[in-house]
Image 1: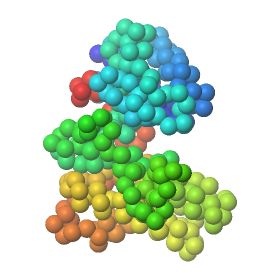
Image 2: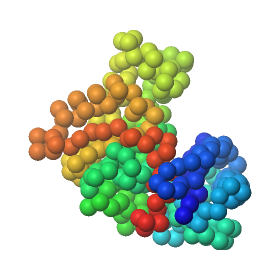
Image 3: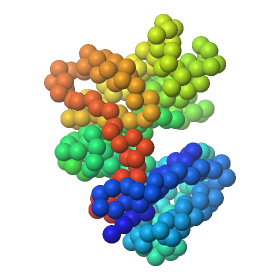
Image 4: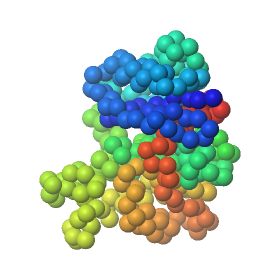
Length: 294
């Protein structure tokens, strides 16, 4: 029993075959998101059709950018990173095209499902998972299950207001919010103000030994911690899993742990801060087992 799994992001569509608990035939295809939602759907169809030539799969699992309704398999909302994607009936489209069951989930939720089954959240009943990239995404697991909220959009941690003095919703819905200060995008923006060559996380951390760069990184780490303080105190999880390429830096995880424990009530001090373990496979692995989750 094999599944074709896709992880549709703004830059790339990662794909593979899931069978007997493992991924194989992993590929990466440019999303070409700027061409719009219909184009992205066609790209996904082409990818899936390509796997049919090598595997007689019996289901499809899709992790995707955007807020999703996993029951209907539709895109509730997607920003302009994929124009015209909102409202796409992804499950229906794929089932009509390939005549096998399809399941669809938001990418951060899918990654959390992957971590819960195969990675850092394994054997944990209550944990939160956050990813720090272009924005800040989140997912909540409680009593061993993904908590979706009343409209499948729970875990929008990027919307926590951390700087109310900067709030101006008429200009930006996320003004003053966690996403604008704690994302990898925010770190790069601050670093580029120091020097234009500091254009991505890898380059920034290569200059960690320079006092001015370290100051920028440390200030960003505190922005990460500010949001985590709120999340830990509200949800009381046993574990917080941090994902995204920037969290691969050991300095970040160490500093987040040190600063967070200094800033939460002692009765919450049992919470464990862990790095996500599955990397860019998390969304695909989560997508692979969606039919057993929903």
